[in-house]
Image 1 (cartoon, helix red, strand yellow):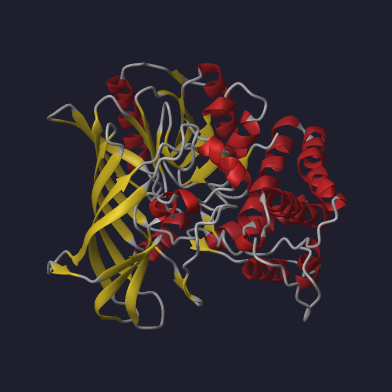
Image 2 (tube, rainbow, N blue to C red):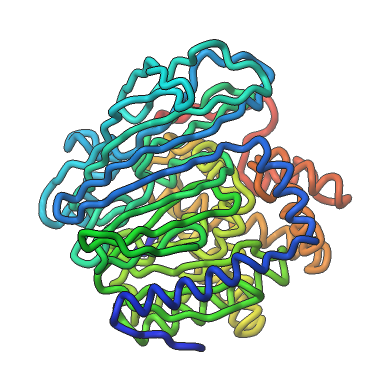
Length: 510
């Protein structure tokens, strides 16, 4: 995510012609996947054991409701018997006006027309083969589903969940405004079970409070025929239905989430880069050209420097979105008011970099947000250096990274730790300076001291080892210790402003 604090054109207004364009380009790309790459070897290994979601969805824009039946196949990849499985129900974070996941000064921007609730209701959970209703319990944004019997290590279970969602009139990740319906973090998504057990965290107001496993999705969405959908994944078929609706069939590769945005006013620019169709869904034509060009150049550079983006599509979507930019797999939201402004390129490139750092190489954004945001921010600086020259890159690094952090230091806060969980950040100012700016400086210092060739070699290895998986700060440090001689834990502790071993800093929760 990036917050703002301070070519080939296809612009046909008829929705049916846009649909033809999407089908021709995305389906052909979907069919020509390179079967010989090492990506496919890892894909096959992980796809055998990852969650698989199948959804049939209908959207009523008049009522602002989504109704769906979801089937999910889950494998117990732990070494323990599981008596229950947990899902997040993120829409319930928007149900109560007194418990919203926003800071107080943000609420007028998020709800310009006043508070409007959003929520999710679960109708039933059952095993689809036997039709056995399962016991489930909902508390706030968590749903616990009791297993019919212990789920042993390596065993699979299929669950069917029927649910209904109400979109709020909200300009955040989840909601709608004047032009777009932002259907993000909207369905019951499995929580992560790891060495710490089930990861169940609040929907924090600061940062991106999400942590998920890679998964496969097969989704059918029925909407009125005047709506055009931008989504995660590849839109493989769009069918006319009786009653004035269309059915969009979407399949994904290995991704961490499934998001979609719909509008009656979308127009589209498209460009192909290295076998990936890049789309710009827009309302402002000139801004869209710049957004598309920035995304295309970023994908081309990150492909060559870090490793190839293995998906068929990537979409940059103008949206009713107050924050600036937000990443989802194969899709990023960009505040539509930024089109035509000076920050547009920076934000588009930042969110594009997240396709590598969050999307392909995952991490726990709640416990160690610096690992994806810091690397994403530094990757953005590297884009400017690559595209506009070293002098421009150095100026961007000083202005957008170093000076940002130094200004923060001058205010003399009590705690400079970069590696900390979200609840320990007092406000967005803390988060911005430490996670984005100081986090980027970790990578800047690595590259400066190691040299560009070594930096690229190690980062390509990092990408290759952790693609489709979740990494950690410790894993990242171990890789640098293994691949180089001069970068050990002491170096990273210093850069991350961590106290000496054995000393703890007690900071009250924000």
